[in-house]
Amino acid sequence: MKNLHNLYLLPLLALASLVIKMSGSVSPRPVLTGPHMAYLNSRVAFQCIAPDSSPPVTYQLMRNASIPIFKGTDLQGDKPASFSLKVTATSEGSYHCKATAEGSTGVSNIITLSVVIPASNTRVATEPFPPVAYEGSRIVLKCTVTRGSHLSYIWFFNRKKVTSSTSPLFHLTGNELVMEQATPEHAGNYSCIAWSMVQDSSRFLGSAEVKVIVKAYVSKPNISFSIFKEGDSYQGNITCWSTRGSHPVNFSLSVDDKEVGSLTANQSLTVWFLVAMIPGMDMGVARCWVKTETQELMSEPVTLEVVPVGGDVTAEVEYLYRADSKLAAARLRCVVSRGTFPQISWLLNDSVLLSATHVDAQSQDDLTHVALANRGQTLVLTKLTSEESGYYCCRVRNSYDDSGPWVESRDVLVRVTEVFINLTEIITIAFCCFLLLMLAVGVACVYRMFDHNQAHAHIAATNSDPLPLTAPLCQSGDRQAGVSSADCDCVLSQTIEITV
Image (cartoon, rainbow, N blue to C red; front, side, top):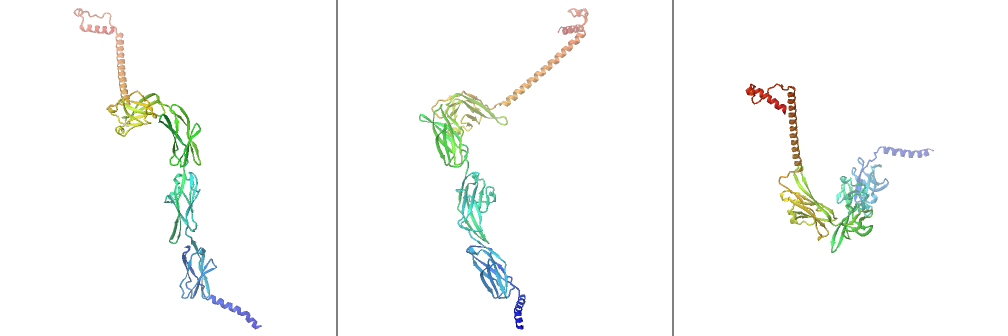
């Protein structure tokens, strides 16, 4: 019975001795150092050290908490254990190390290793594809790679880096470059670079350029026509054009709602159609039509009728003044009663001065002070001296018939002198003369009224003191009769005034 009691005590004594032994030792506190990121197929090194541990110390590198990788022993103490590792796709995960010394084991800190895969086969993907869209549409460019991780992206537009200064045109998000409402300014060549960085090492891989086309909507077409003579017949040259739009654009011509021609513009936005015409006859109503993938527009109508030159032709002159009221130029205008395509020629003193259809280099050099406008209908004399004085007239004929007769206007005189009184000066002088005349008339009227009032006052005074009936009259013999000379003069004077 006593022996059985001793058997129960043995395990308790062993456990107690173990607890005493463990309490007398310190567990290792290992520290693990190593990279957090590494390129695929590169080599990395982890180091584990348990300071203040008595040798020998056994180290073990663990991955994902339970997978042992390497094991090593430090026999001298205070020296780290190094573990070299070739990075593969399965190397990504969390790492720690264990250190065992004097029967005690400690666990280190954890390092998470990310495997960085460099970009391969970088290219630009587009939405829509192909990258062709009309203005106002949404365009998305994506920088894609066949393989790669932990990547950043750089975009280039026409080989210039897209930065924050160009952000109003673009929206950058991840590997995407977005144009919410594309404009023709967004058209151009785009490329991207996918890159990654591990510590101080960077790896780049660029894509090929992708051309993005942003089409502008075509504006409403315009229409005009001209006429020329070919042999004995006449041809109408009808022009159809738009002021904006992207190629290709299909133009068609209809006359009286019947299509007579169609052309595709690939380089410009202007096309021409030839139709037969007869001057003086209505050849119908023409329209231009423009068609694209998304639009169909038509021009305003134009009547294909050529009215020959005829009726009265009149030349008019107008003088132009500067701000200081000095004469600056003279403008002559040729007014034609009728004619769709008139050719106008100007004459000075019956000599041809200038024509709207033919001005050779020599005549242009000689007439630098003369200018034509409004298809020759207006002649401007920008230099006014006595040499420009004379009789001017214009003559008109059909521009499509060089052998046709001229219709000539009457002469109009343009007189330019060295001292030229302009209209303002004439009005000023006339007003001053009128003012002086009114002043003279006013003074005369006042003087006459004053003189008239004085005469009436004198007459009234005379009537209030009449002469006595016995007043002596001065006869020829009065002086001898004893009447004084003064008395005679007074009576005579009074008698004259009363008579008047």
